Amino acid sequence: MNNQAYESAASLRPKHNPPVPLGALAQAASLVPATPQDAAALESLQATGLSVDSGDILPGEIFAALPGFNAHGARYAAQAVQAGAIAVVTDSQGAGIVAETCPGTPVLLASDPRAVVGPLAAEVYHHPSRHLVTTAVTGTNGKTTTSYFLDAILSAHLGACMMAGTIELRVGRRSVESPRTTVEAPVLQRMLALALEEGVGAASLEASSHAIVLHRLDATSIDIAGFTNLQRDHLDFHSTMEEYLQAKAQLFTPEHSSRGVVCVDDRWGAQLAAEAAIPVDRLRAYPGQTPADWWVTDATVSLEEAATTFTLHGPDGEEIAASCPLPGLVNVQNAALALVMAIRAGVPTDTAVTALAGAHNIPGRMQRISQRDGRRGLCIVDFAHTPDAMELALAAVRPITPGRLIVVFGSDGDRDQGKRPMLGEVCARLADVLVVTDENPRSEDPGLIRAAILEGVRSVRPGMENVEEITTWRGDAVERGVELCGPDDTVIVTGKGHEPFLEAAGEFIRYNDAPVMAQAVEKKWGRP
View (cartoon, rainbow, N blue to C red):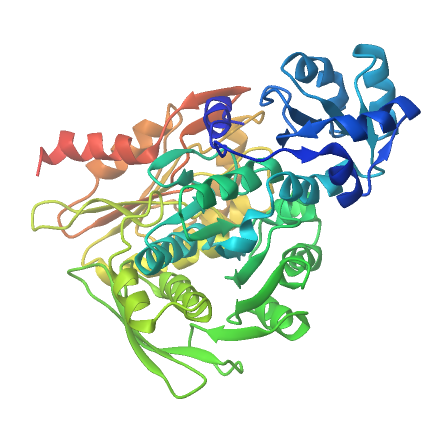
């Protein structure tokens, strides 16, 4: 976790949050006092907030001590109490630890404390999502791009939109780096409360499968949920694709969302739309015969603008002419999803179309570092890190590349190992020049990760033509990609996108592809 970012996120609290009696919170979350003395505390104490992080507690708040993979959160209860926590919510094991380390602290019991954190946080912050237009996007790829498109559209309609996703946590003009795709429930609920306090009218959220399974979105009232696609990823957590889909599907239930929009371009989306427990609009962005309520035609990429125009057809005979500010059908899918979600949220179509056209240069998502101008080549940073996403990214930039397509890429350590040769095969098949480097090796040997990628490359190019392996530093590979780029070429650096750190051998090293690529561009071609 990026601790600095998390500490900054801790400041995104409402200035005035009316306290709630501990007894009312216990009743709302079905909590049981651990002792008769703890029961007495329900009558006298009031809470002003909640946190699952002992380092993120203010006086008057509750500490939720959750069982973890390596240690029980109750081990940190004394630190939370010292910071001003008035009570601890935990399980029976945690209660014993609290009794030993900070005796006298009121303890409220839950059989599954993680499952009650969401409802408890929503209650203590007065259910702010009920008073905002709240959207949430899930799926393997496209969550961030779609949520930024929605942010632009909802801001144009309502004046301002709160953002909580992979790249940033933003309320009004205050923005901090996000520690994860979907933050813990207390952080999310107090951000929503701050947004409401500051007159923000909407919230655009990203919903990861991990977050859904771990209850981080529980008790958040979502007006419109969106689904992009399901591709091979996170199988170290979900085991199978079916299990992965069912995690996403939980968002499309009445407990979470009122309505949904589901892209049915893959079989997983079609299955989700058929099984959803809420009203769902089916959207088809790619050519095909899958039944859909909304569908896209006439997608055309502009070589000069690197944007894509398209027509969105609706269930009542609508024909909406729209422009996606990013290239490729993969981004048309994201743009069309954002449009339909916004329309279902009550945004006028003209407002949505205009705002979408201006929502360009999302950090790490087909982010253009240099434009093609007759002297410079086109240089792009993108987050594509799965085989399917890589294929879509390379297919998106090929039509806007008169010359060679150069890709700089690697693969994560301590993650799904099966995708590594698949990434190599995709790049060898669709790009002209390959520069293989490290991404986030984590605890693994970087050379073994690259070797697995190169195995996939070799299955397509036995002679390894136009393939380079950079073993020193990722920044060197980015610079090499730019060195190889001519005025008609495109170089795309994939895998890390917006990420502000490179993780290797237990260290988080401050690093981001975009400024490194910008420096390489300036070194080669000078300032524009």
